[in-house]
Amino acid sequence: MSPDKEYLTASYDFSLPEELIATHPASPRDHAKLLVYDRKTDTITHTYFYDFEKYIPKECALIFNDTKVIKARLFGKKPSGGKIELLINRALNANDINVYIRGKVKVTSEIIFDENLVAKVKQLDEDGSRIVNFYQNDVLLRFEDLLPIIESIGHIPLPPYIQREDNKNDASEYQTVFAREEGAVAAPTASLHFTQEQHERICKNFKHAYVTLHVGSGTFKPVDAEIITEHPMHSEYYDISDSAKDILDSTTPILSIGTTSTRTIEFYDKHGKVQRGEANLFLHPNNKPSRVNHLLTNFHLPKSTLLMLVASFVGLEKTQELYAEAIKEKYRFYSYGDAMLLIN
Image (cartoon, rainbow, N blue to C red; front, side, top):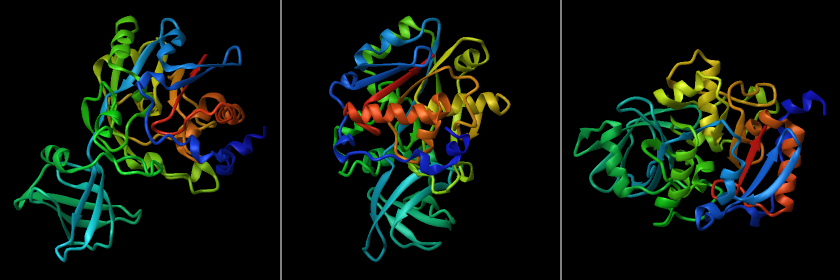
């Protein structure tokens, strides 16, 4: 395949039957299907996630993302009474919060929520997002003070392709069993397959560590540019624990649990080995991983940076083959869908 095709966004398009879009998770979690692709032998194995441990390469370390999804979707009203919806995207600093608002607003507009919570629009950004400050009883809130309030009145921000309202089960199902650091508006979905028992067993038997990447809504943004390298990659806050840093700085082979852990590890490795900050790394076939050896991931949206990240491991042509195989075998796609393991 011509290397030029790897730069074309159109090369990452595919047709997916609507019935393969998962709207609910497998139950139990570890009963999701698992496609294992061994790059050394060029073989595919079809199995289930409860057998994941059998395929973990020996002597490798697992890196998990311990971010926790917040109830970022808020329903409020204007002072005039008109209904309005707000989606928190990310905290820019202690007080300034980047959000998306469904409804017309201008600078100084106010949105009123339950529990005397008010968002005041501070800035309109060209990308369609807004910067707001939150107040409760006229007191300016820091982001950490906002979190318990939205835990009470907010909703789990299910991805837009799950075309239903969130329910009480999503509060736990759209959250990993090891979620700890609040701040994500999308789950690290490859990790949703682990049950508590399976996760504990794996951690007992394999070297492992945690990084934090607060996944933003930009993770769902399709690449609109004709050439993938012209896509402006979104930025997300990351933090690498000391135990993860020790593994990353060693020669131990790494199995990255999910694209979010991968972006964190690779940003660290390629950009000066800084333990925390803002990561905006775009992995694709012409910007391959330098530190991650093996990848666990879900099946991603057409023309998405996540699909291009998968192609950075196995190439565009093989990615197309694997996705065609998954569709043929009726794997379930996207956040609540099935998983794929790429091993050397």
